[in-house]
Amino acid sequence: MKIITPRAFDPAKITTTNLPLSETLWAAGTVAAGTRRYVLPSYDLYEAAASTADDPVTGAAKDPATWTKVGKVNRFAAFDNILGNPATGTGIVISIAPDGSVTNGLALFGLSGATATVTVVDPTDGPIYSRALALQDDSGVFDWGSYFFSPVIARPDHVLTDLPLYGTATVALTMTGAGAVGEMVLGQVTELGVTGFGSQVNILDFSRKDRDTFGNAVLIRRAYADRMTYDGKVLTARAAYVRRVLAAVRAVPTVYIGSDARPETVVFGFFRDFTITLSGPTVSDCSLEVEGLI
Image (cartoon, rainbow, N blue to C red; front, side, top):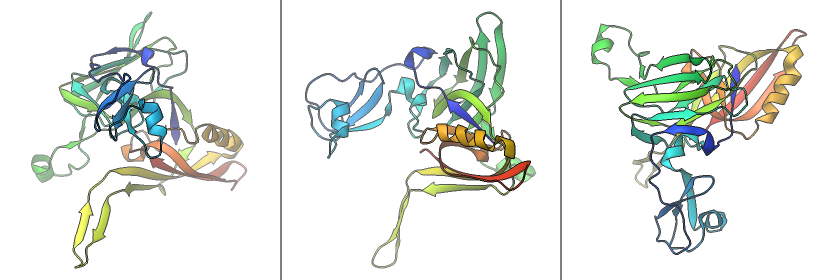
């Protein structure tokens, strides 16, 4: 059980990208409902809820709001903490420069494309890391019938916790084909404990499920969020440290990892509840409930 604490978004550190900045910067004046504009320096993208002359930041804070924040512009959509607002393009290339912090973990969500490769390049030592990512999930293939006739299932989420500890290296994602990147989270890996097999994998479905006056089902499909309850063990001597680490990331979008080898245990979100039971002098039980972002 571990976490990746994300680096703060800094557009100046996105040193290379082939994603165009095609959206329109907000300027004073009246716009029609449905108009989209972005603001600086955040590159946050807003949509007008009604005809308005308000600036987007002020309008979004009103009640009722005249603007609605929808994420960041496409160039920086992989860094807006909104999985449902991916960066899209063909042959996507995104490079992130160092900022002086320890960054040995990278999580990628919502990947789609022909191929994807993560590389780390140091200005002195050159290329020091390269990993090709498998964008196809073969876990459903268990016999010849499923091999030939099962539909191709994408594997959109990947987590790397073995990036070399170089303080001056650039981390790059290179893709081929038309594709998307839902979220790209680079940061420091912190070990918390060991995840047990009692952990629970769930989803929170925000779809609407009602019945009309005749009993017919009325289903409106909407987004869902991952939810994970980790059942683990921590060293009793590290209980206070683990508590401090999690307290520091409360209400902060963070990558929670049960096991690198089990993608279903990886959630990008925030923790709802955390409990350590001091059950022994050496090892203690812990429970961590995490709710994912949409």
